[in-house]
Image 1 (cartoon, rainbow, N blue to C red):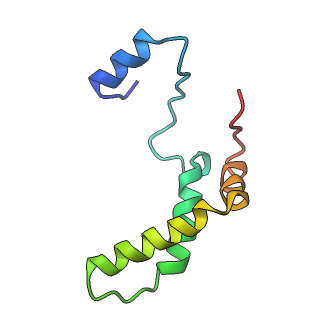
Image 2: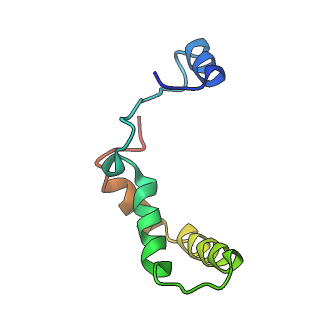
Length: 86
């Protein structure tokens, strides 16, 4: 288990909850946030920003829009083949 010591101790002390699944180091196909970031990158990938603040605002704006589109987030989770239910 590749966890920092406090987190590893917490997981071991609470073995019945939460259930922790260790994924390989790079598994974008099992990581719903990769789908979210792909959507963000699609919209701002060609942004010609003059300063970092512009990029930050663009990312925050896109994430805010996605926050209200549950069907898009659900699709990112479904694309992993994983389920949110136990």
